[in-house]
Length: 62
Image (cartoon, rainbow, N blue to C red; front, side, top):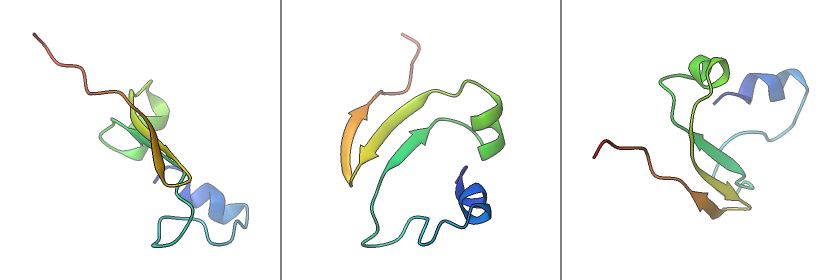
């Protein structure tokens, strides 16, 4: 999780992934959190309030 430590430093209570928690999530195609921030990593999918709102399949060679 890229923003977990930042949320903790800002004092955000109840932040993280847990059963019953609000689910706003973006899935990024990167080997690790540092690469996701350092590079322009492609976004694969996103969820808002627990519902998937978009999906972009991984690129593939033809």
